[in-house]
Image (tube, rainbow, N blue to C red):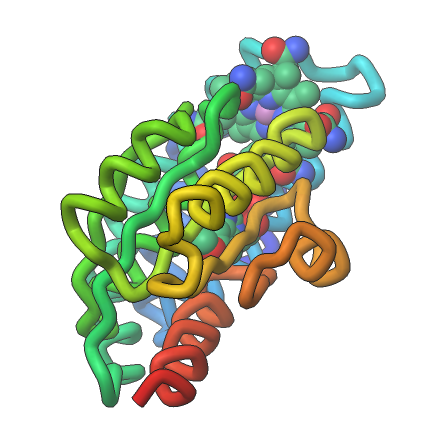
Length: 216
Ligand code: B1M
């Protein structure tokens, strides 16, 4: 089964095998989102565990990220097609970024791609985004939503720094704040005063839709 094989090949860092199975899965009619969530993302979690146990090192994490990104080039057109079927009722303008100190960009970019394909306007600030950059973007673009991603427990706290600064500047009531990434949980999101949390890119699109309904 190509999904399982793609997962296994990514864990073993076998690029050609990953790409071959991703293509095969698409040919079998498996949705791109399912390939990403049920196969490639699962492999990345496993790779994280191998890193933690000392079996893999930074070089392997870098290689895995590079293979994931190459697979994304094959999957992105299909993914956009699928997300466009989740067409937004009310279009939101969203400023998104991975917070300061954190350079993990795969999940954040996936969320940005899906939101855009669902019809929202997305301003992607990239990675290692400081509070100043978030504030500047909120003042400049006047978004409906600010999205923050964090994969490290050490950087997740920075989301609160951004929320507190939005409050201090009188901007908090003008935007909804959503957060996500492996270092966050729904409880954490609530604790830092965010308006929502999503476990993955599909749920992030649904969350934005829900928040925009409330605003309408
Ligand atoms: Co790093 N890393 N890493 N890493 N890395 C993790 C996160 C880690 C869990 C691995 C582990 O030890 N098990 C661990 C963090 C531990 C912790 O803090 N609890 C870790 C560490 C320790 C580190 C370094 C500190 C290692 C070192 O240097 N000693 C270092 C930090 C660098 C830094 O940021 N300052 C580091 C570096 C790297 C690489 C650069 C080598 C590479 C990233 C490359 C890149 O992104 N371009 C990397 C990788 C690849 C990983 C793992 C293996 C995979 C991450 C990934 O891409 N997942 C990761 C293991 C893991 O996550 N379990 C790990 C796939 C992606 C699709 O999932 O990003 O979770 P994810 O996104 C999902 C959801 O979370 C959600 O939707 C996405 C799509 O469905 N989501 C949102 C994400 N953002 C959202 C925002 C939303 C809503 C939903 O709203 C706004």
